[in-house]
Image 1: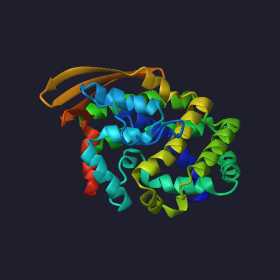
Image 2 (image 1 turned 90 degrees about the vertical axis):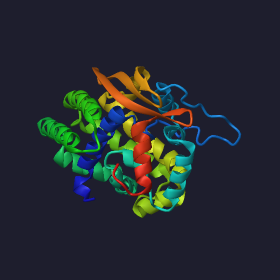
Image 3 (image 1 turned 90 degrees about the horizontal axis):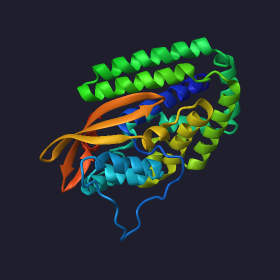
Image 4 (image 1 turned 135 degrees about the vertical axis):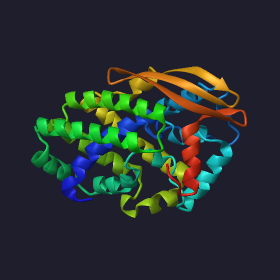
Length: 305
């Protein structure tokens, strides 16, 4: 990653991460280290109703428990397969639910360089400081590109496309109004992210090998606070509160046929209402979001997300 392009990529990553979280309820986006994996002998909640497939995951997000989210998002046997696949380098689910997931090690490495925040700010001042018009144009370009990508990606069905289109509109309105060109806010943004990257203990220079060595659960436990810090900074510096969207989430059962259901998910994102539909599936008596299960299984075979 060229040093001069790092601030731009970090900001694109931040916007894309928020979009994905809002649209797909992504894992591992919490503000703290979380309670970690369940202890032997403890009983973890299960989604016994279709709506719980969303509510329980939402609760893991609000409890800052990325590893717990991964456990609840897929059936136990699939989770065990994913754990093994991580150590073998065959899967990175649920990280590959995140946008720009392949760039996470590179971003960590860039932020872990000594005095990284000063280097990033030097570039920011040259390219972005007080350049509100240029940043607004970049946001509009991202909105168009994101919309076209989703519309053309066969992995998304009509409901998912509609959901993401609403999220893009909400986040685009937020980004155009946010003080993204303010140098003082950017200084705090980069300094805090740099410290979080160092605290993660993940060797960004080692790339995916670092994730394989740590395994899925430990990787999520270490990465969760970094991604959480990113979202926390967006809230504190730029006014985007993803937690508020999670707390205000409302899920209703629209229809159910046997072991399949359609959920209606409603929430407010950056002040705009979002009204979406998600498929859920029952496996061995527990309900899961169908998209997570499908993509997790595909990841074991190196298939498309």
